[in-house]
Amino acid sequence: MRDLFEPQDAGDPDPVRKAQRLSKPALPSRFYETVASRPEGADPLLLLDSRPVRTPGGRLFAVPTEDLARALAAEWAAQITHINPATMPLTRLVNAAIDGVENAMAPTRDAILAYGRSDLLCYRANEPERLAARQSELWDPVLDWARTRHGIRLVLSSGVMPVAQDDGALAALSGAMPHGPALLLAALHSATTLSGSALLALALHDRLLTADAAWTAAHVDEDWNMELWGRDEEALERRLWRRAEFDAAAQVIDALAPPV
Image 1 (tube, rainbow, N blue to C red):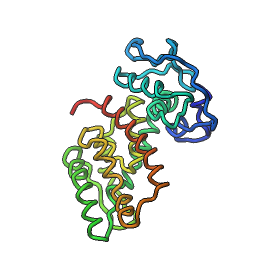
Image 2: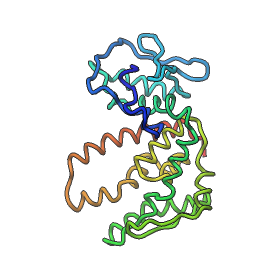
Image 3: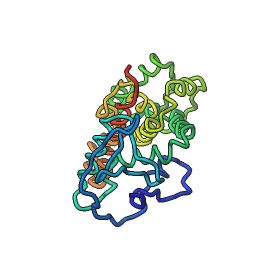
C-alpha cells in the first residue's frame, strides 16, 4: 500500500499533486481477501482482511461519512488480480487530503483561489457565433449566480488576452470558498484544476450544478473542436481518466458541503 501510492516527486510544491503522484509502474497483486469499513470514533475506516488501511504517509485511512467509506471499499473490492491506482480516484484523493492537504490547507486554498484570476468562464470566443452562444448559454448563469449569491463580479475578456480581476471580486471569491476540512479542500482543488474554473468548483459546492453540468460547462471549447474536426481517440481516453477524477471530487464535495 505505501509503495503503491507513494508520491512520485517529493519536491513538488503542490500538496495535492505531490500526494497523488504514483511511483511504481508495475502493478502489485491483490494481497487481501476481504474489504469492509467500520466506524472508528467519528470517522469510518477502510479495512482489508479486518486490518485498518494506512496512507503512504503512515496515517490511518479514514473518511468522515459512511457513504464515502462504502465507495472506497467498492474501489478496493473492484481490484481483481492486481491493484491499479489509476482505477481508484477516490482512494488517491483521500490519500492526497490526509498526507498532503491536512498539513497545507492554506496553500491548497490559495491554489484554488488563484484560478479566479484567469477563470475559464471569463475567456470568451469572438467567433464563431455558435461557439460564443454556447459559452454564454452554459457560463452566464454561473457568473450571474456568483455575482448575485456571493458578490463575485469577474471581468470578461474576448479571445485569449489576459484581463485583470478586481481585488474586490477576488476577495468575494475567497469569502465564498470554504477553509476546510482537508478532504473538502482536496476535492475542490481537484475539481478546479480539472475544469479550469474555481467558479465551477464553487457551483458544485453550493449545489448550483451537478457533476454532469459542471463537466459539460468545462468542456464547451473541447466539445466544439471535436464537433468541428472529428473525434480524437487519444484525447477522449485522457478525458475519461480526468472524468473519473472529477467524479470522485464531486462525490466528496456532495458528501461534505453543507446544505444550501
